Length: 111
Image 1 (cartoon, rainbow, N blue to C red):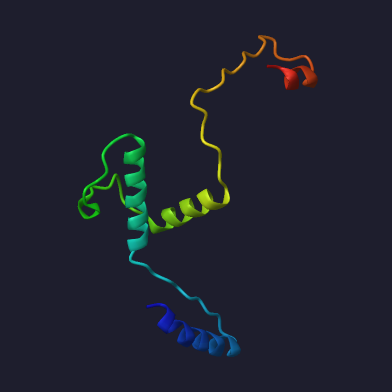
Image 2 (cartoon, helix red, strand yellow):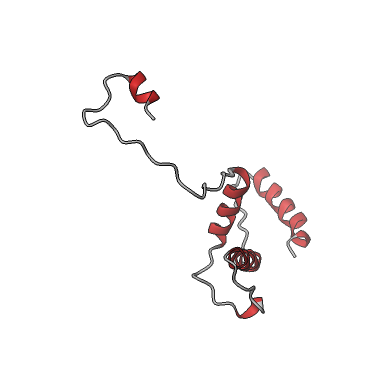
């Protein structure tokens, strides 16, 4: 339980800072929440693909190793930098004239 240790860590950190020392606090995790998030994401992908859900989440073979750091960064990026889903049908890319464009206006308005 992290909350039980916070007051002691803060007290000791302040004491060390007052003594002119530097303080580095490291946090460790078992990765359980990342594992649960990965399993939930896998379950969502299966359902979205029209496949039946997993019966028991405990015995699921994962597609690869889980990385807590990767899960944290992925969650942060998805939350703070959302993007629109790709269109079902990609628009065709217009061909570029063989000799290029003669002006910036021609290049910018090319469709």
